[in-house]
Length: 488
Ligand code: NAP
Image 1 (cartoon, helix red, strand yellow):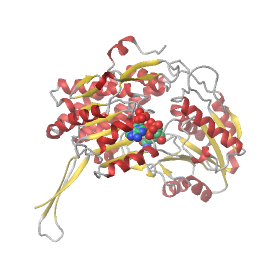
Image 2 (cartoon, protein in one colour):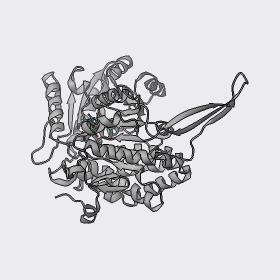
Image 3 (cartoon, protein in one colour):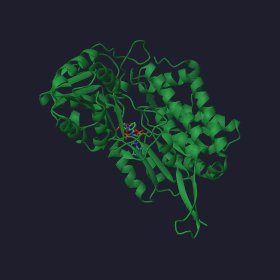
Image 4 (cartoon, protein in one colour):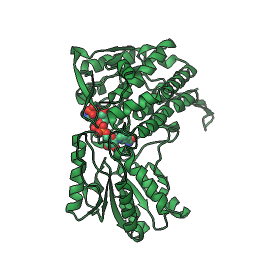
């Protein structure tokens, strides 16, 4: 049985949200949300139709002008109040994340802290939108440049960080003055719906427009989203998910030249140079690989290790992984939770088989533990061929392939040999080499001697096919603002 408290379960919204009201989807259709650790059905949730999607967009469009007119200070204070309420209920949010997504409770708590921080950060940024006044260089006129909200925004989020992926978009959108329609992933809609309920009730208490936050859970995302992208009431799409789906959405968004932000897939290299502090590199590798069982866009995907330490690094990483406990996220002492579903387990198993067929050795793990749930053992592969799928594709599972390199130039070439450019990690005790990593590796975020880079106040995003735009930091707000230049 799920460990959700009966009090939390009794008050969870399970409908769709539009015009400030939770209602059933049209036709009363629902779909099941399942606990990946047990296969247990947690809730039946409203299955919004394309018509429901249009209703939610109408709700956002109806309040766009009113919300744009609300003082930045009031928008800021709403976000700050929602931040406080989420922090006060962080235990409930964490248990919900663990129930629908599977990650261990300690990780879920850390995600609540990280996710809430976007609301605090954008509460602070809402009152700091700047413009410009200057004399044109020719002296003929003044230039006034000001910013205004882009308008109703559709926010599409993945299942792997159910609170953080939602707040990373909702925070800047509301701060900028944009009402939103959120379409959470079908695997994990509940956490996002609880966030939306906190915003809805806080906004209602403050007398703010009811339709600023709308939610459309659905089991048919393509059917619901496609017509919204050609609806001229929609002015912005912010998507986080796979590169394949991002590409499709960009094509669909092209018709009305929609403003888009794309946070897509990754294939992060984790580079260990010969001069690295190996103990620190092993600590960083464990975090960068196993957070959320490897199901993170910034997960270390390939371990590129200098020849002189590759064997020792791989063996010591395997020893660590072998000592970890795999199991249900709500059980004390569990380090690694389940993968999101059976399909994910199947894909990870295929990647491991492909690597071993090409000569890789399994130092630990390599398979599925017995019993229910969609688990995969933490796995270390040594001597991996650089053409193996596990090196070329996003793994999204607890598998660490180790590839040896001979010198810095080869390390940089291997690191950049991918269509992705999201995150990278490097361990070295040389400042000169660290600076070179920053200059040579094509990635939007680089951790030097750190296995984690995420921070609400820093720009998160990638280059190449990892996306367009940034979330977090000052840059995250820009994604929801238009620039207007007045010549005076
Ligand atoms: P996904 O399959 O691309 O799904 C992401 C979201 O898009 C979900 O809400 C999904 O809804 C929706 N979706 C799927 N097909 C759609 C369509 N045709 N039209 C409209 N919406 C559609 O990705 P995922 O498996 O959830 O997440 C894993 C991927 O996200 C990985 O590639 C990971 O790297 C990436 N990611 C990137 C970042 C980043 O910041 N760069 C952060 C986290 C994850 P349904 O699933 O309900 O259909």
